[in-house]
Image (tube, rainbow, N blue to C red; front, side, top):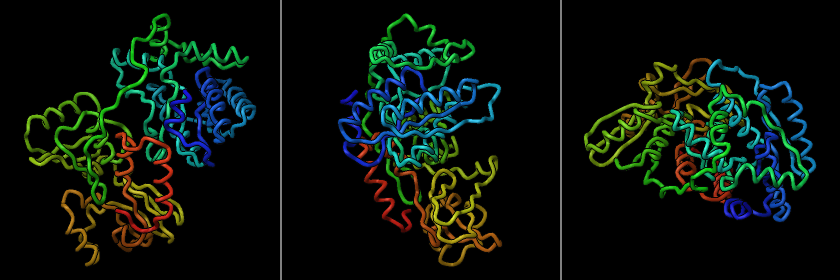
Length: 412
């Protein structure tokens, strides 16, 4: 594990390394091992704990984690998920809420990387669940936070993917350390619990590390337009679509496979998926926001708070020093732009124009192109870089964050 941490993280840096610690054996072992590493490299640690409020003992579990963090010299932050609790799909909803809270706490603490205690057993259980029809992603040792936009600029590191759950518990026992076993892990109503039971006595026959493909040949132009070849892998295509659409759920299954088949056939076409519009031509593909989707979901309207970054439509971050502005899409408002704004819009490809951010004032005046009044950052470039393997070390994240802090102009 030490080699993995050294390969991904900075030594002797003032920013804390964040750890997601539930109090279970895997995350407690992760905290112990990471604390050993951090003491030798003078890195501060901050423990992040999410109370899902699904067990009456969860406040006690939180207190135990806080005490453990203090004993090992780590900071501590916690958040509570108060629902709403769905009747079906509770594990997925809890997982999404957990990642959102982890991302919020990590950003508040100034961390760039969140460590989790996933093991080889988790990978094997995920594969078993896929065999039962679950649509899950692949656990990787280094990947962006799945929370969007809360997790922008954050990476997840899973340094225990090569370790067995039983071995980690033996390590804790040797150190005289206890942990909490969540009864939900043995509840047969949940597919993850059934997978754990099915594999309890079977060693996982899977590689401990997933070998990633080379970075996809995708280019991000002004205003977050994504271009690439027709021969993209399914993984790269899915991620490009979700980035262009500003969402957080990757397309999988039949619709993605059908899109790949059409691309492979050589035909020119346009298609929409997960809020993005793909335009396939002889020279490759172009992916933009599918603004027709607004008719179903409602157009995004977000008021700007002076001095605070505001993410709009999952695709742009805006910063204003002036109160009274609200961000909306250009769709349906182009004719009311001023002459200079109209000229700028006419110079852009028609497909991308409706999804541009514009500003209206609370008194109804406007619209004006957002970039003409406030700082605007298109998020697609960084999101693709993190998700497709172009950022390999915490130092890259540090450089990006410092650059963003210095640059106060429009960066579309």
